[in-house]
Image (tube, rainbow, N blue to C red; front, side, top):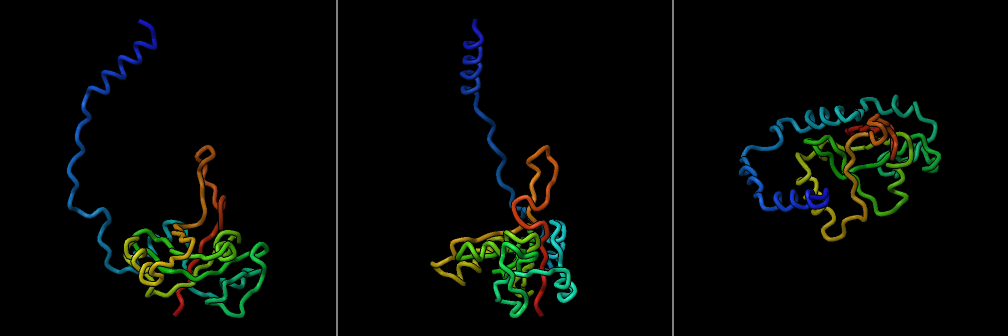
Length: 184
């Protein structure tokens, strides 16, 4: 028998054998329960190497060129995005279960603020924290109805990849640092 025939016979035998049925889904939740949304968000966000900024003036002092969408930091920085050390944006909401930040953009210029500078600072309010991605999608639907912006990003920590030799590289496809400041 040729190697080809041997392989084809094994494939035929495998196709005749029924695969075992998967177990029935469990009623138990996938995610552990969340009590304090802000505490859970902070925990998950920092596990993803996000930084929660406590003193905004101290944090901003470390940057020479700041680009902002103007929504939360009026009068601070007006550097072109390509030259900026820091990009500052608002967000739609924060997801407690995953420590993710949800941002939307209607143009490439808006997207550049969260993607081009080496550091991305998100300005948010504590009231924007939601439990999970389902709740985040509900926020978007309520706010935008049928006209959701062309880009919705769920940012889970600074940009990273381990594609090459499984070595973690920060900032490969975006900012090396992701920071968040809660507006009082």
